[in-house]
Image (tube, rainbow, N blue to C red):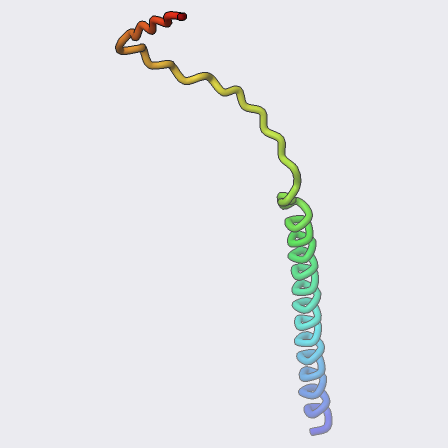
Length: 80
């Protein structure tokens, strides 16, 4: 019975080690993913538009057409 007890205990130890290594790998993958998200978020904040700065825009305005005169008025001035 002693040999059987050792084999099942050895199997349990291997299972625990396997589960622990899987957990460790998942934690490492999660940490690397979180680090990557942090890098991406920092880049997005750095690259976004800086509002509040001075912006100069140059536009050429064309004059509006002048409406034709409908009637002519003559003014006569006399001195005297």
